[in-house]
Image (cartoon, rainbow, N blue to C red; front, side, top):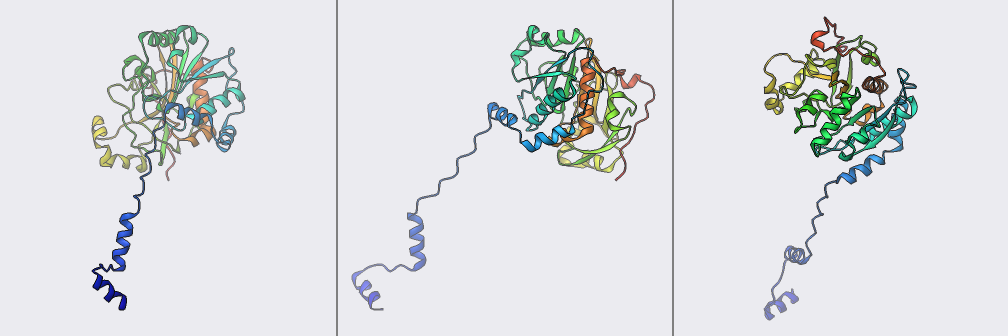
Length: 337
């Protein structure tokens, strides 16, 4: 009390504890906001792909078939291309490792890996029997010469295989989009969901991996732009979403997909996932499986992909008659859950 009276006599302001705390807070230097994370460059992604964990490599290795489905007619060499101009799938590293291990273990082919458009030239492509587009996105070839080199490659009776986002490319090259068979139009069936798949052609040689039965699998599944999808008149559909399963169809009720779904009209529709085709004298295999790293740890998936590649190489004979002209095919639905 004595100190307070002295302070009043001297005209000194008396601060309550709360005022002292507030004053101290004002004097304290402001905390710096953490610097925003720099977006990954393509070089950052490449380093990540090259540093796949030992655990993931081991899981992929265990899923690789023991041998090729058929003996190659001659030594085969493939170019695995993995450039991205749009969304970058982190599973590219798993896909690249899977292609390298398929080559090493089965001896079906040898594999070189590239992210350079410059490799699409006649002299370089002459070394290869097939091009594998591993989760590429928004590829825009640099000039007409590169486009012509790929078309000439196909005219020589060679092949192309596309994995997952290979269906999200060539928006400035209509013939390239037609070669793959379809272009991305959203993925209502997200990577975290387990979806039902039917075999459109259970007896087809490229479906042997699935033992003639539909199945459930967790992956991200695309639908395709109606105006660029080549359809059953040009493609032999192998695997589709099983639209007879509620888990698959109820996703389409989500308002998020109302805009993209409007392109397909009302009622039932098909959503193809894997197919093959003949194109410009060559062969094409495409599968939309492969968004997730763990897809490459599934033995059936790796056999399906290997068989598709061996078809593209010209070693595995497979019927490419378009589905619309193939006669009555009896699909194998997914088992009910």
